[in-house]
Image (tube, rainbow, N blue to C red; front, side, top):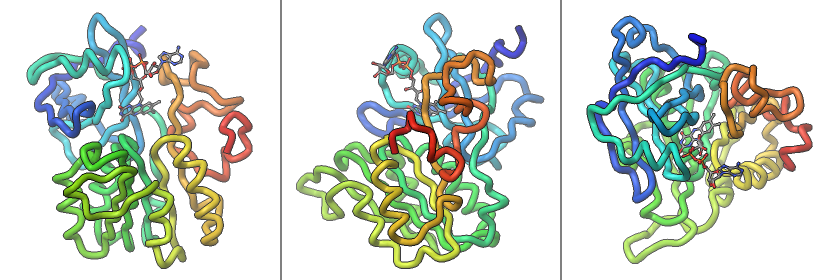
Amino acid sequence: MKIYTPDIGKIKKTIKETEDTKTFQIELENKILREHFYFNPGEFVLITVFGVGEAPFSISSSPFNKNYFEITARKTGNVTNALFNLKEGNKIGVRGPHGKGYPMDEFEHTNIILISGGCGLAPLKSLIEYVIQKRGYYNKLTLLYGAKTPQNIIYEKEISKWKKIKNFDVHLTVDKGNKKWKGNLGVVTKLINKVKNFENSVVCLCGPPVMMKYSIPELKKKGVEDEDIFVSLERKMQCGLKICCHCNINDVYVCKDGPVFRYLDIKDLSELGW
Ligand SMILES: Cc1cc2nc3c(=O)[nH]c(=O)nc-3n(C[C@H](O)[C@H](O)[C@H](O)COP(=O)(O)OP(=O)(O)OC[C@H]3O[C@@H](n4cnc5c(N)ncnc54)[C@H](O)[C@@H]3O)c2cc1C
């Protein structure tokens, strides 16, 4: 069926982020599809490594970029290991963009606070690049990002650029430092205290479930309402089209109703355990 047939993409460039994480710049072969590839930050694509399998990845580049899009993948299993072995010029399958991302129109003229851990920064990088390109429409941007060690920090080049942007506060932390590390130590939730003002703000969380679980009570203490918190969920997924029932939590489908959800809409789903 056509809906399951991937389009062909070519790996234009690979960027090593850490020992186990790489960014892939992908160009769709078909010029018309390439020019009409529009997505909202937070949406994802299903990538096929031919002969191995398919897996979902958040799009990590700006939606305004029309020549290629990027994903950032961490080596965890079959597809990601095979993806790591591919070289520039190799072909892959692409389905999507799929899902529901961040409501960027609703975020206009608010402060945006991003809380992220590990590879969870991927969809938020897309959001950050979107905001940078439409700077006049958004108020202050704050990024709280945590990684296990300094060597596990992804997007180092981008982060140093972001640190120089006016009205954009960037705070990093690592669980375990090294000789060179002079920054914060500890889990990312500790950085929430660095934010002095939560008024007129939305908060987007993307990272390990445990990070989201412990961040939400801290945000509530600061007076952030459930409707102003956005979480990105990950579930084992197959069709990406709300057909196969692999990614649903009760009657909520991560592939189509998410992966980005307003916390208010999902907080009572018992499976989340938050
Ligand atoms: C919307 C969405 C966006 C995502 N975005 C990203 C992204 O930007 N970057 C990224 O790196 N990842 C992302 N992921 C996660 C990624 O899709 C998964 O890690 C995917 O499983 C990787 O495929 P794989 O074949 O390499 O790993 P798999 O072989 O699927 O293994 C992944 C992990 O799951 C375990 N596992 C495998 N099968 C089972 C099973 N049956 N039961 C229990 N555990 C099992 C493995 O041991 C391993 O730890 C996203 C997922 C979703 C749903």
